[in-house]
Image (tube, rainbow, N blue to C red; front, top):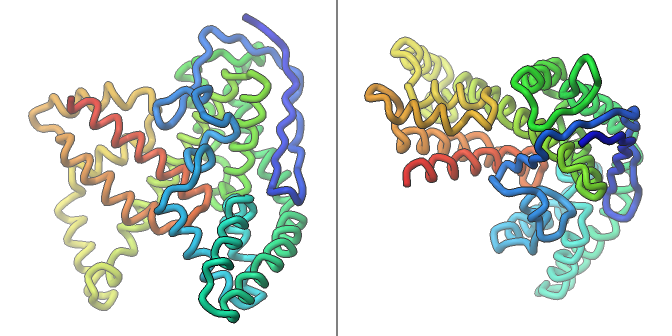
Length: 340
């Protein structure tokens, strides 16, 4: 079925302000088969709220997530005023959420002394002002990020007709990955991810399931490349932090590891990070069946190490952490399914 769309994607941050990203030009979309490629293996339409595809935004927070919020609240309440804007900007989606402010109110009621109550009450008031300032100062930045997202999405369209054919062909997926690689990694930040999330929400509301799938494909590409880069950096900097020795000794350890060659599980993991997730299952089946290949257990261990060393080291509650964590969780789920 062919139809024309003019998609306007709006990004709302709390109740303070909303941004409207640049409009897509009127274009045709040909949906051979409408698919929503959710990173957790579920169709986006199954979302309980339909508001955000991120698991943490679809339900009540877990005990662990409340613990993370409490940690953020405690640190922010004790932070100096000039430190607050930077902390807020790194986790704007969490800090600006009504649930975060509700948790502050709960903490005020739970406070055991007046000093703690005053700190928490002051934090709530300061957060409102700080969020408004952060939102205002990042408006231009978000416009730039929206243009970057649009560039990658346009690469998914057929070059001759400008139509989006879903599911995407291998050529269009490669074109998206190439377009993403041209965006500086530093620009693939919270603003970039928040823009993609907002576009997903708007596309879902407008019934554009094919566009939802394309945008989720973009998030998958981002996560894979970000994790691959982080793994390389981790190997380069592991030295003193891991061995407890000075950097010169650590460099020797790294050199010895490099001389012996990377482990098969690590090599295969790197390959998966740069591969279309639709190809994961077939690649892993072939690898696990090969007598000299990587075992599912070895790959799972490599994924877990990456989760602990890379993802858990990201800013708590940030979009980057959520996207990358869900990406690796999906990989673990796929491995477990193949083991059955």
